[in-house]
Length: 291
Image (tube, rainbow, N blue to C red):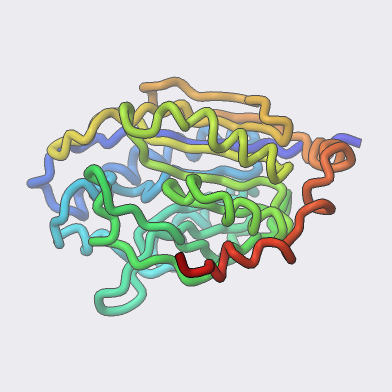
């Protein structure tokens, strides 16, 4: 029997490309831009929705300006509380990527997961933090310390992997071992750097781990940093590596796909990757031998 779950992704451009404006004003503008699209997803019957990386702000990591620490908040906190009202209104699970402050000088790149009744289920903290080519994330984020949780939502078992994480196969596998049906990868990535990998890595991860992947990227250019154009093309891919739906390259958009979770069982009856893996032979991955 089909097990259909309607899922959605939202990709959005930054409406205020003026870094001289107050951080709170820029954040509010991004939040205000998202709310009608969240409503649109709700009207379309989306059951699980994921927003883009640090959804309520610009991707500020090309700078190393300490004022952006003011964009962080507690999780759960004011923004997740607001998203919980939308989750409850539409009976919609929402994955909320946000900049998290834990204590004085301790910040994470985080995604909260809110169930369809508005219940806060927990969070994932980005594990792999880049420091290269204008992506100066180690200035802003502490490496995640919460492992690879999978959240048992009303509609499916959901995992999260954030942006740069996608280049590391170990976390994808950990999420599969923890029971994920769908893994969402909210990202901020620009043309000319990793675009050639965008339609390779996540489909490969979906195939290797036999689950669905939702990949989200923002759109447009964000002044004043000018690191490039975020190229959108948010998409869903199934356990066979086939694209289920894809957004445009340059438009604010809600992309929706009906995912049949029964396909996971069908594929795993053919490709027995979980049966045939050899963790006893992988010791060098975590305990490398000296050169």
